[in-house]
Image (cartoon, rainbow, N blue to C red):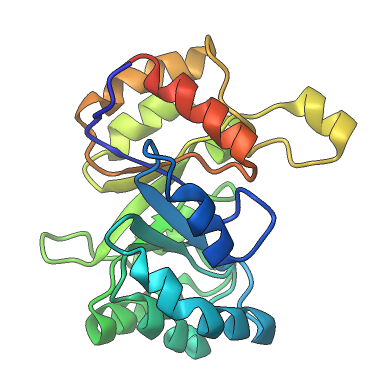
Length: 239
């Protein structure tokens, strides 16, 4: 197994039960992990308080880890304070396309990009939601916009991740890499996606060679260290 790959191997900021800082302490000695996705699926008073309490320690890891941040599902102007806080330490922000009024979302992202020198990646989520937003985003050479592709979402739609990556690779800066396991979901009640990678899966075998010259972030977006560690081993075993 090669220890150096062109992409940044990343995991979410919740792979053990605990706070942001507790997870970063746990991950610090895991040398194969070079990046951490700070999760802000929810940004309420409790999260704000935790972020304030731990900010000095979180930011102290900015040389150890390449940070990215996943923004809340529904964005509004009030989230500007979160962008302002994180922008100095994160490489880019992951954004889910708005269910309504993609033009307004594009304007908001553009304003934040200019105000905070922030970089945003739009992620493919539910079918048909990304394309309306893309129509309003500028992907020019000086743009602060890019794409994050999510393999689990693609697999649930019946799309081929390797072909999707090849089609959009010019703008892709991050991959959320995880599998789908419908049988286990029926038993354990968890989501069908956000499952560990398994060696021998056809779709992964097609995608993995394309990562040989990908210098973005590959985020194993599973939510336990056991699943993340196993997924990292499967991913890197071919490099």
